[in-house]
Length: 154
Image (cartoon, rainbow, N blue to C red):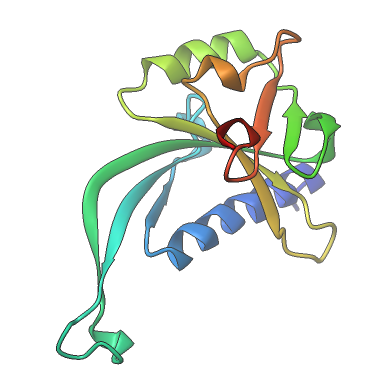
């Protein structure tokens, strides 16, 4: 038997995996016992279309760029403090301790908040934040996550 919290977490991780795979990237999940504030690792890839067979998708390749990103996933309504269509503000337990861990990573670290889909429904939307950027943290001790592109980039 699994808890509702575990169901939401698993569905959110599957959502991130699905998005990564649809972009041709690889997703590698960290076991919960070893995650240390990191739920997975994304391997960035770029699509290489076979120029001699541009319409034959079976001949296309996704080549590793060398880019890696650590990912922390959060989901569930209990994290949300405020929300707009472009931004969601979430509270992360032990944020200062986790922030120390994220800053130690030699890789970029992003937080992805996945809006839960409800019982029997697949999540369909997420926000993200660069956890190494001071702009991703509010004065209230919360994380600010944006849809892409960030309103700050406009």
